[in-house]
Image (cartoon, rainbow, N blue to C red; front, side, top):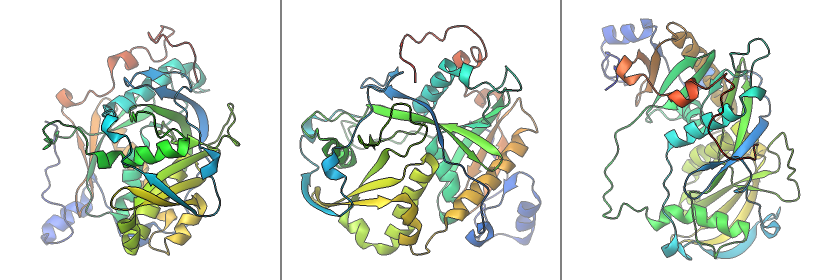
Length: 389
């Protein structure tokens, strides 16, 4: 077990005056304030730069090529809403179970870094990457959303290695699966099935293990971040092999009619979530399929990322997300630099703030030795794929 911060519950209500004062004075707490505290013009956030990409096959093996890159059927790229009849339950009895997990995805990013380290080295030092932070998009989204999601909790581990900060989700206790077979309910694969229709191959056996991931460098404020989000589809008319941005790609989402009818939730949660997905990656468009309770997509609409805040009707402010992210990253860097040999835990508690604690040595190893021992060396990484991106 990791060391945990010794303060009592951090909920906003029911605290004693002494407890509240302790929280205010503690240098190990990043306070999550009201959203109004993060309004205003954010630091400059440049369009993400594409550094490369890689595929993951059905066995969850990384392949340094574009074999899993998928393209949209142009029939679904209409600027006007489309009426369709797409059955999301079609062929799901043959679907393959998903076998991936977040630690594996982060380690695949590290494998890509090892393979391409020659192009990532800092101009000032051959023993340092030209990147401040390596992480995953899902982690960034959790941090960004914190001011708007007071009931949510999350925890990350952070460490400095050779001048860069590495962020991974903190391990959590596995939850027991009440289903005897351990298989996902077919309903959870409806989003994947919708993607299949848009790619024009709905009769293929559905295998959610296959992925294509772009490796992106995002510069925001004083920080440069590297992450590798899974991307859904590309527009065949716009895609170029030497692309440096994500303008040709499209996010694909399936939305239940009941969700759209809950207008408040739709505007507050779904639209903001899609905006974050695309803003962090630089994808300009979203295809949304609206489906019934029985899994029939009856209409498709094409949305533009830049228009989502207006559709949210002031339920959320994009600047809040970016301002909060940058302020937290500054706090995180300051804490980790106090002891660069340690691993730190940052924990967001429900209805509370973000608590920083230093982990015990027994819990403090999350960068694999095959990475730390081979970074900045000329030794081969052992990967046998010949095509790199």
